Image 1 (tube, rainbow, N blue to C red):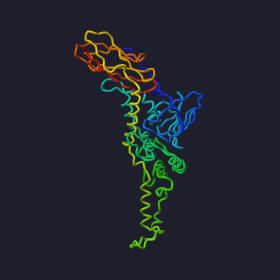
Image 2: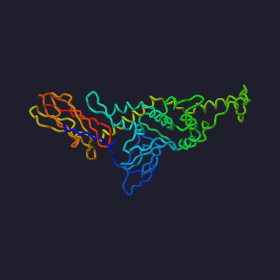
Image 3: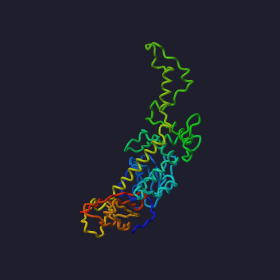
Image 4: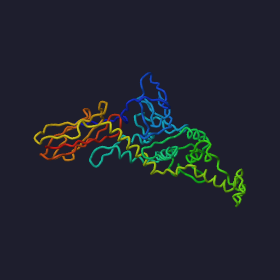
Length: 372
């Protein structure tokens, strides 16, 4: 086989986009910066910085960078990660150096081909990753993160977060055990203390007011039995008790988003990125047909839409090697060679797995070959 393996940085580069607004200015001396994206379905409100760029991610989660730079991400004054290699797609897994290194090690599936997806899924049980994902999902304005939706961290949330951080009992540490990170009770964790000090409603909303204290409720007058005797200027005990309950129920905690919610969200984002990367590649033919008598070497080539194909690795199998046999593959030429080895009426599927340059992701494409 002509297969050659080498290690390369993550992710293929996206085409540069015209950027405006909160992504910041271009300081590259006239050369357009690349556009990257955190997750796939959008992630707004994160501050980012590279050696040359800085700004805030927009609704699509976009940021600017030049190849070779590293990224730092923050939510307001809360540091999330530093020294992340800047790439077209960045996920929360890459916020942690150990997980970032592990992503470079693919696994082999039942067909004997390399895949990155099992590696990604195995890493989703990391405790620090779960802690960070749950907090960021809790900071989402609607706390929904529905299918095909991203996370929206509004400036109102960031302003309250910055005001709350100095008042926490201890700094937020994503590396503590999840039970400690999500603790409630009489001594809630710093993360839950933070959420309790953020109101996810418009400024001036009643739910953003301090809840009436038990003492205030106890000292308030009872509401008269006769509605005609109610005074609209008086806060009755029942009214204050109901208001207190509404305000306390509006306070978010990390219990509302559990580890399974976080895994579901991260898994969806990873799958969508793989699909997007894979959609940028195609084979130069989908179905090939050859007479049984033609046993010469044939080739199928991987093409990239709008760009020159550059692969780091490639491999292939034939699902029916008695009909169609793999001869060789070449990552340099981005092609797989095969020949007819069966009789008329036979067929096989050539399954190709390849890793583009600058990414750890393996893409899967198939060619159906029919023997006439």
